[in-house]
Image 1 (tube, rainbow, N blue to C red):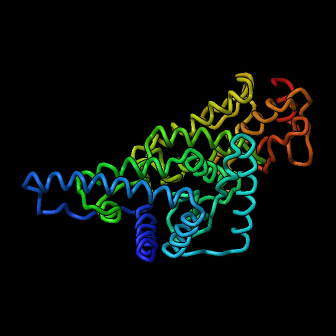
Image 2: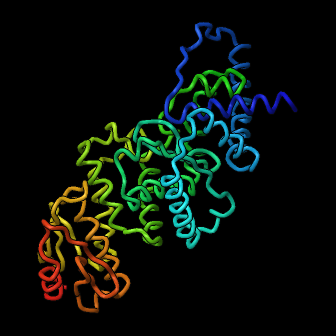
Image 3: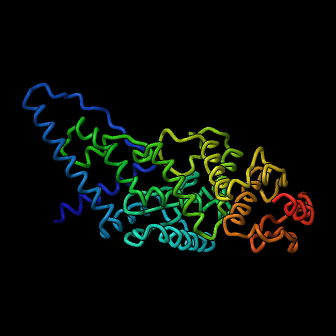
Length: 358
């Protein structure tokens, strides 16, 4: 029993290590040359594969295994605590859990474990057992709660569809048969993978689920497109850039493709009424406004937030009411559309135009 617990602890440590960096060992120089050794390798590989699957299941589905892996992650990456950020993280997970639970009650079977780690890079991840972590470095680039919630929703999409376990099995399986070390630990150590074996279809599935989750939450659905516009503003359209938001496949979709996928969903949410082109917001193919850059956001990033509010207004029936002004905010029924800054068009002008074209 002690041997099994020790082995599980070792495997958990290696599993956590391979989340963000692979471990590559050179292939053995002692290649099997006899029929006996070849047969032994195949048998050893089969045994290792079975053991690997059992260990993945242990860390992915049992409460004891989930908590063991969570403790290993905290030990490896360090726990960062700041009251305001941790309170915000608690609030986001509460909101997103309720949103996901409204369409997938299985989330309550394995509530997400989460923490902010001490890594400076821009990343967040979900691994086995619904264990999640956010790098403190992410907050250097994202401060808007709606956009951070999109990152979490994407990772929770991976978790709900069991992508980490599926990716791990597919990426480790060939290694076990090739190396046939006879132990799961050896197969993991000899294997290199990025993003836990996640594929581009898995990335798209997590993106699409994130939209559904955010749409059922208190957050602005336009943040789904806005966060990718922000990534483009900061790093360009390269999917393999340093801003590797939402850990996953080595063959990520491009940043622009992900933004445009969400923009299409927002247009569909509005019943085809609202679009954004080049940072300009259109309603019924007529120009409504071009937001000014403000609060650290580009004009284009803000445009997607306006788009999200308009889409929600159409979806929830608020567009039947007149647009009006409440302070500096343009309202459409009960739905806030845009809070104007000094460089935006006057709220009253936007409200008048919106009433004319909506």
